[in-house]
Length: 347
Image (cartoon, rainbow, N blue to C red; front, top):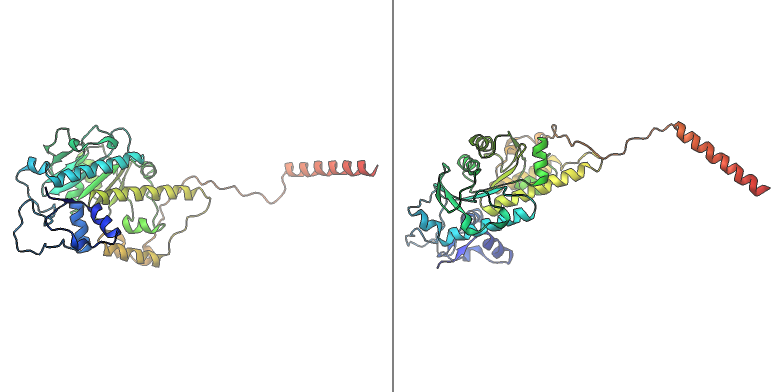
């Protein structure tokens, strides 16, 4: 059986000082691993070989171009089984961080030109099993899997059609970011570098009934320039080059919104990173191939938070400098008591 290599394996290799170019060419690479290798501009050892690869070859194939003739065989292949495990892992992490409740949330990964692996409906994301997963085509028709696919897969598919870089989508209800979505307040920008580079603006998509085509189109209209979208009165959906990448954005946006909420309670105006420094962050972001509508904006336009309304601020109301009647009464009482004590001592 061929070895399956995921993006996590590559990340751990690099973190331990390894060279990803030494990875074997005769292994199977998950879609997120393929994209990471492409980002690093690295080819596994031996991929330049003139040997013509077959469908199970280790030479990484882009999900957008891969065609599958035997769907059931592919559904049970080592590569897809690894992705099923990855999805179960992400589902558990979503559940453990309180990003989903009940059977909420859904995860998908595009694995071929017209095939997407996704989570089922009516199953807690904290207790997913590999056998729960489903295959659907880009029209939402289920092609494989015992359990019924998630009803919200139509949104994922609309996102993937509109944004070719969206290999994976994660939808959840992280409480802090969802609070912004319920209040319909777009989080301010230019506060924290990680948010600027990996996410950026998190716009709010208009509310539509969950699972509807309208909801998918509402979100898809924003994915060309944004990888993280707040869904009015609903939750958050992110896309990434792999399931891990999409999940990271969910963590980042909720941690960011949580920080903003805490910061507004300090009773002072929130301070932004200077615009020239934000420009530096956007240059880094552009080099990573992450979309952002602000690339073409002038420096003075980068941190426009004019619509930002922090809501209730726990500030202490200013005190009147003039003494109030109660203050005068207290002062007179203190004076009287002091005189009584002094007279007592003198006598």
